[in-house]
Image (cartoon, rainbow over all chains, first blue to last red; front, side, top):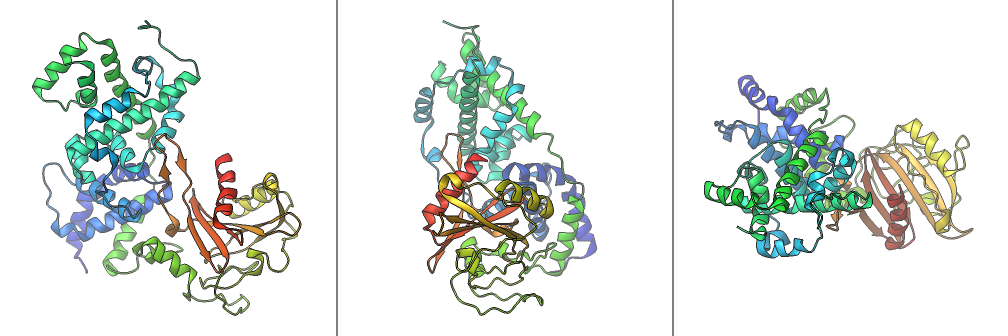
Length: 191
Length: 283
């Protein structure tokens, strides 16, 4: 397959401005900088090959590139993008009941100085399963809507919501434990 | 709306994803409930913290050039190899078991002219002491699995820490050279031994005075041993390995940072894994 110079120029004009975003997301998914670079290069190659089928719309090329990145990541990992998870099969009422037993302390987590827990937060995030981690970081870093995340991850919006909920709860629980270990507890609403 | 209901919506409320009716109901509840208000604050604080940590990721200065180079190559060879510096990436297109099987079976890539000729014998990973090999054929390497005597480069220290320090500095890798004395394994040698086409470090251990060996190799990262680590759901992650057992030898491979590590032994796979896990979790 050979593409003429104008197609290549158009592709670069549309796609290359999003290189930084694609790398940031790749770095969130990958275990290392080297893996992230590999993911980015593979993403742009696949995007280039699919460019003749791409339609530029008002939301630009970023969601398209991130979706390809997502596919590349999970293909490399040998995972199915839509592999059913326990979370997808569990309704929210059941899930909320499960979390009621976790003993979280929202008041402490709301009031404490989060900056002193940056390393712990990073550890907690990197301990998440990739499906949860990617949704959490797409939400936080890229400021994407649930619909935007769903398009990138190629899953229903409900799955995005439940994964995001679960990811935040797991991370919050980890930080709550760190806070308790350090004796941090808010007294403002103590009974 | 009560607290139980609101907990299902706290994230969507904080993210502005509720419709008008649900939003009003949520606001009414929050006016009366400091705990749920704290939940909303928690979500926002978490987002701020994640932006602080991950939002400042530095993008490599040469990444754009690398991408353009990759695109150049893709234009010339769309369906086949996309060669990257130092390595052919055809393995990316194979499922990892097939890639690993290919590496452990007969694939001749070209033999280094300076390497001694060795008769191929199925059953072991190819390593040539003190040499860099460029093929990946199966061949019996005596000292990887304890046949024949150990070899030790005379310029290297004899302590695990000393070996790690010298070879790590020399090779630009994080060389694995742990102290296995608590597990009953004595360090008996270290050398510069290539594996799977890459130069690397080889550290040899023996159980007791005459027991089975354990060989650890450190090379620059290979892409085809990536496996997803399994998460226990509590935030901890179990190490992920590619494990091969063939003709009575165990080979464990895993990636960590910029390195690929191999553990080779005639011990059963679970025992090798247990030894390696003890080292990985303590680092």
